[in-house]
Length: 279
Image 1: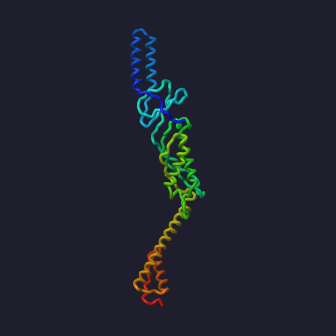
Image 2: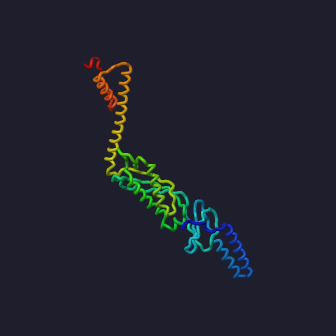
Image 3: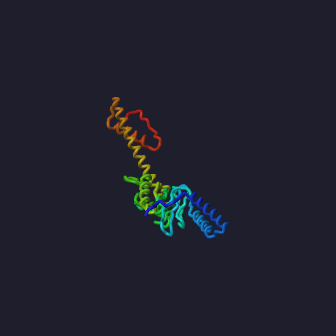
């Protein structure tokens, strides 16, 4: 079953009926017409008791002796079915911040991960009657979905291609939103957005994994430097030959060695100037 619109009238009509009934009833009491006067006063009280106020971004779920009559979403003062009960539920956009969860990624590395989920209620019937507590349901299902998504990817990709939790945060968040929506639809909740708010290796492996990251970064930087250095050496030799300076293989080897050492070295080079012949 889904949410339906409840029967309602303008609440100010109920106020007018209450004033008319109570006023006329009191008048009849003064005229010794007790039965009719009391009846009108009771009817007036009944009308005023069925008035409910609905705030902006709020809904009032109406039930009549256990039967669902519908939901009032429009803000204002409304007159509803007598003897019915009403339950207020917020339609505002809300955030859920998960605690830091300790899970294993797809490679078995223990990591800490947390997320924020932005959601709102879109079906009041499901939110109130299909689950015990939709807020608790959102909390538990959000943490379950976060664990499931974290188990599908590695924390980082050092050498292989593919998604990782650290390198593809937007894609991971989008997948988390899709999975959350599938889980929370039963509670009448719409997931507007989800984002990772915390991602780190667990303390017991953080130091060793940091060293691995640093080593991978150094290796990648060295590879870029070597590629650039080789290109610069090739350009230098081609330029010299274009200018008419011919070098034999031994001089080319010496020049390449000197240039590569000067460019690739992580310290400033201290050149030794040779004023004589190589031979």
